[in-house]
Amino acid sequence: KAFQLVDSLGEKDAAAALRNLHLELRRGGNALAILGGVAWQWRLMLAAKGYLAQGLSEKETGERLAAHPFVVRQTMHRARRFSIQELRAGHGQLCLADRELKKGADPRLTLEMTILRLLSPERGQSLGAGSLLKTR
Image: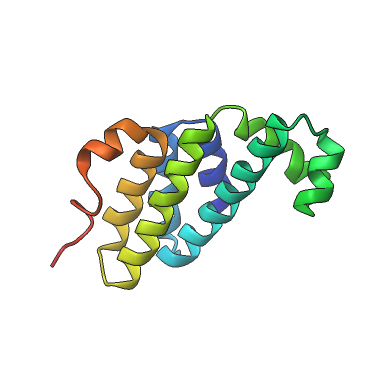
């Protein structure tokens, strides 16, 4: 399920994230929809990380995110596992993956590489932007 994919990303568990991605794709999940769900959660984590740095409480963060308290609690927990630099770099990777999918890149490979880049930013940078995303 898509929620399991987001959970495994939030736990920085690349193997579980890839397994959950493959399950979602086998169930007929649309690559852009999967990417959209991951990007939504990533943006929440990026915002929450900023609010944590400002010293905002969970309640204040929830008000700013306009999200359910459970979502806020989960998001703040996940955001603590990443540096602000990792979250910013990840946002760039998600934008790149969105563009590549819309240009016709292989969905499975694009999402796999994006997951690896999200969880290993230094490794993802060494691969180069878009170097493994195109199949044509």
